[in-house]
Length: 167
Image (cartoon, rainbow, N blue to C red; front, side, top):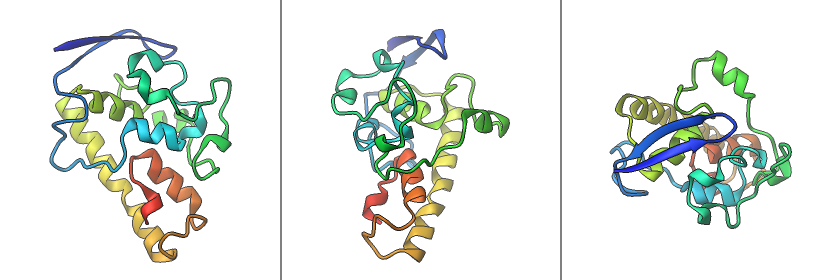
């Protein structure tokens, strides 16, 4: 098992262990269409999400990542729209797990790397499955491949590793 120690703006001295190979042995119900690296290159979370925790993850994830270290920049997003709610909203709803204070994408990055926390993994995978309803709305209301249709929903789906460019 590989030990990871995190020291960034939101976590100091947080430790976790990698028990699976990177990108392998996912839960049977969890089939993300995009890797964390692909998501960062496409442009998610207005470029701000991962700027202070780069050392935790493989450097190749960030080679062509669209990041904005100083402030959120929707031009970094693939669809050039904001599709995020403030972290305070996520906290108020009880959607933030204590070990992943940045939310679902942080959980996904750590899960992809090989960290497993059974109960939390199941909770997050259920949330991921529920987000897919937005793909149905795009299919119902848009012509296949019209990336200008429902851009905010498409961007939100990207945040959750659904490749909304294929809808």
